[in-house]
Image (tube, rainbow, N blue to C red; front, side):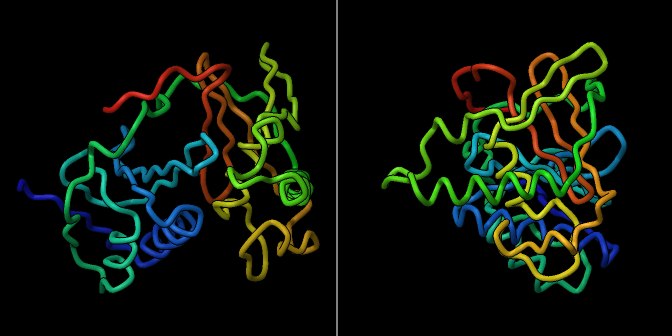
Length: 228
C-alpha cells in the first residue's frame, strides 16, 4: 500500500476536524470521509450527510496522497488519540465514495440568511418529521420542500429542508453551550448577527456557515457514479 498519511499539526485545527468527524459519525455511524487537497493548500474533509447533501470543513494539514477516502469513525478514533504527529490513514475506501464533488470555483454570492432563522426551520422540520415519519424515515415531500428562497446576483435560489437539516445537524452554526440536535439549541445563545451565506453555480447550491459548508445539486441529481 502506498504511503497514506495526514498531519494536522495545529491543535486548534485538529480539534476542528475532530468536531466535524464527531458530527458526521453521529449522523451516520458508517460514514466515510473524503480528504482532498484544495488549490489554496488546505485539506477539505467531505462527508455525505444522509440528506442527499454534502458537508465540508477545511483545515490546515498535510495530506498524502492528495485525495483519499477513509472510514470516518476510524479516522476520528486515530485523531482523538493522536498527540499531533503524522497519522496513518488506514485502509483505503475510495470505492465507497459515490458521486462528484462540487467545484472549488465558479460560485456567486446570492444572499445571506440569519443563522437563527435556519435553526428555527430545522426545529420545526424535526417536529414535523417526528409526526409524519415512517419506518423509512421522514417523508421525501418534507425533505424536498424549499423553506428558504433568496435572490441576488441575477440568481434565484431555493434552499430545501434537506440542506437546512444537514447544516444544523453538522453543528456548523456557532452557539454558546452544548448541542446534540436542533431542538437543544438555545436561540438566545446564537448571535443575532450571525449569518449563513448562500452561494450557487450552475449545478450546485452551497451554504457557507462559520464552521463548515453544505452543498447540494440544483434540480434533479444525476445517477450516482463511483469516482471523483
